[in-house]
Length: 381
Ligand code: SF4
Ligand code: SF4
Image (cartoon, rainbow, N blue to C red; front, side, top):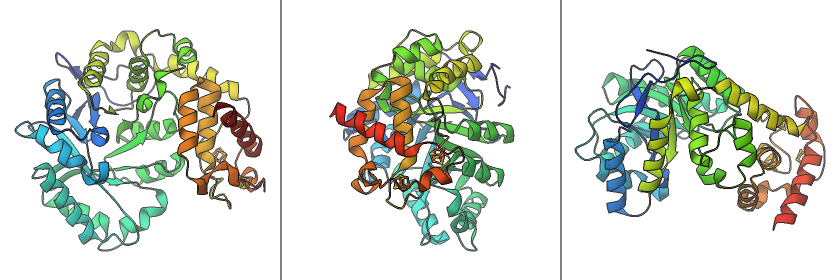
């Protein structure tokens, strides 16, 4: 059995007619290389039932859910497709934590999610929207970790993971606690910020679920630069999945799907992925690094040391959009995201105080970047 490492090592352990499987860290579970994020299911019971059921038939064995997606309906939309088909299937639930979340409340939520899904236990449960500064809420007496360990003793939960968007370095600290079997972090060819975290997880035998592996359709336009960088000529979603799954430390690429066409295409990509021929992770990274180098000295590592901005500007988000635009030319994605940022986090609030540049380890020219991005955004609207 091949486990995590680095370079161009064979990362896939086995396959059946339509799917490939990898170890989920040291859990003993083998997870399908393509997994199903249920956060994009439509409000359409027959379609969802068919989709989930077909995904299982095609060999997908991991479904990521929480009651908190889709206005509280995600698990209701998922459950009908699971009926009678849960043997060998991993369904995760997820709950967030904060200062008010007691162990009892966490347990109650877990039981509710099980009930909605029609399951008697979770093979895998996640602490959602997690960050290093929430660790005290997890660890306090009678808190969430106690509830999780009790649930594990009772067989209600088998393995524990976390998911979130904290700084990559903070997530390394989280996994080094040894408290988690698995992590779920964003990872795609246009967002490689968590690569150091993913590598560390691999070293420690912690499973890694890549969320947004195809960037939620982001890559539908402007992919010529990426094709050249990767030396591939194929549809953008296929290219994106190939990149993510070529990283030997990734256990599974969790894609949010809501049509049978997406499902079939993604399954086809995974099935066609020949690790001996395509698993050239280091070469792909080198190609993407060359694109990243076009940013010169404006390479943001998403460390978030510049936060909080006194004016509320979401600096790492803007730096990511800048990179996405400059490196990959993904204008539609940038335009959509600029519109989506809340006014209280907007770059319009920047008063050029320069505090962020003092706090940034590499003193990135944040102010110039924001100005340039604003100019580009205005040109696009
Ligand atoms: S320069 Fe702008 S973005 Fe940076 S800390 Fe000051 S107000 Fe925030
Ligand atoms: S701008 Fe600098 S401090 Fe802020 S996230 Fe990027 S690298 Fe870190």
